[in-house]
Length: 104
Image 1 (spheres, helix red, strand yellow):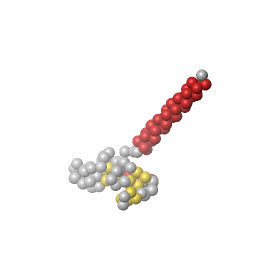
Image 2: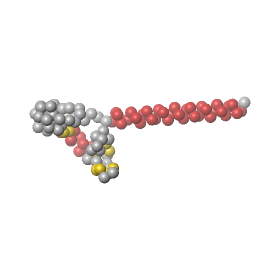
Image 3: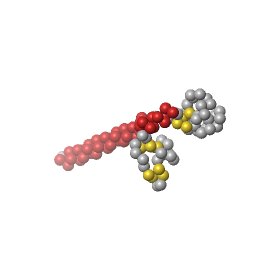
Image 4: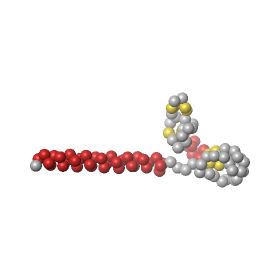
């Protein structure tokens, strides 16, 4: 009888620990998605006025590379956020050297 109680308590402990571990993992996975805001890109020639785009690429009118909008550039200066040049979705609050690649 005592062995059954000990076995039940051990099983309950393992189940409760695994449930709490899964909950914290879900919260950590959701946090970067909520923090990541949509960057706005615009044409440096302003050939389409103040039109902005959600993704980097080429301007459909003049063919130039889209750049971060002036508002986004000001936000980056104020926030001092560094972005990996190879993975723009990865950011840091301090410069990082990774395999001789300097974050911008």
